[in-house]
Image 1 (cartoon, each protein chain N blue to C red):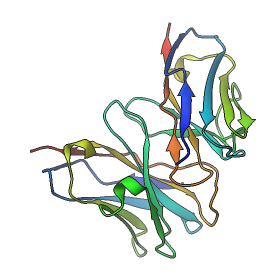
Image 2: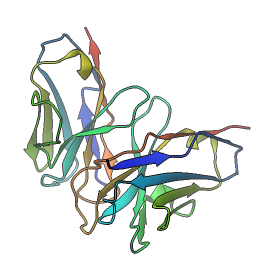
Image 3: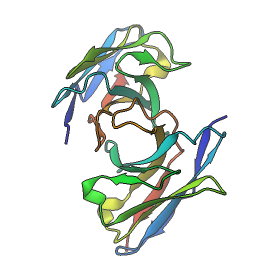
Image 4: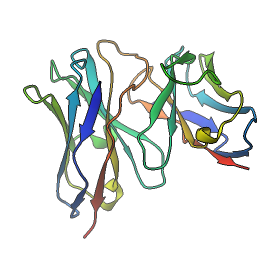
Length: 107
Length: 122
């Protein structure tokens, strides 16, 4: 199975801060990599697919980068509605595997 | 509007089975596989498997093989996930979702159901 390691597991930030979350896959997965946002009591929401493709309706302050094994999600200027938990995921092959999540909290 | 609507919360005894449904609407699921992902309380996301509504072909995560069955009812456009021999560790929210079918590798799970809470308790 492909392991996905995500860090940090949590972070505190202020509105307007630039935030970066990183994931590493245990083997190369090209760009079959996705990012999700989850708020309490809700289903995950796909933010970015194919490592860097922003989904329709997702604000441009979100961006993704990476290829192979190392991937990054960046929020350029954190907004109040961005406080949530973020998960990364590889979809190169099954079993699909997720990172452990990063909880973004208000400082 | 593309949507997945799931059945309501369930409470089951250890050793019993649970069957969760996921009704698809929006007429755009013919090219998609349906996945099931679960989330234990306060924990991360765990993929359980997928099934193709057209062919019935499925791919289950190893830890669920022998206990999970994923099916599709074409007339009602509804996916079902049955998990048997329940234990307390199966207490979780179960989500249905989808990905584009036809390839080994794919991009993203783009539509999700609202989740179904399954509690396993004696």
